Length: 95
Ligand SMILES: [Zn+2]
Image (tube, rainbow, N blue to C red; front, side, top):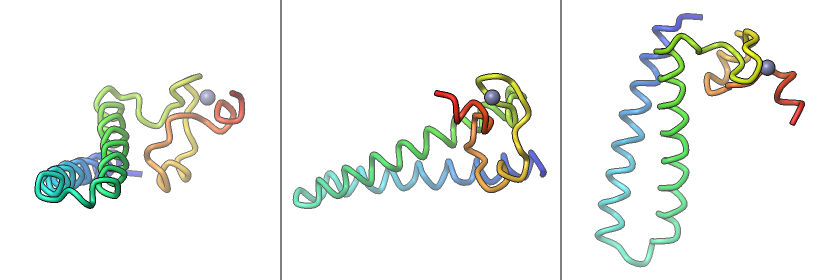
């Protein structure tokens, strides 16, 4: 797994999501009837953007790939499928 590659991908994703949010904002200004739908899309985009930003911060601080709860290294195969994972399987199972 290549950290730099993941970071590049996330940086790209961050840009995409920011652009999408801007577009949604413009639609908000231009259209009144679609507000509910747009609101839900805007919310999802914001949540996604927050996750991307958080993951980039983890890569930059060197904490990426480790459980944020107990510090155990995360399963790299699962991490490759979902880079937004921040907890190991054991901590996820224990509330
Ligand atoms: Zn853990």
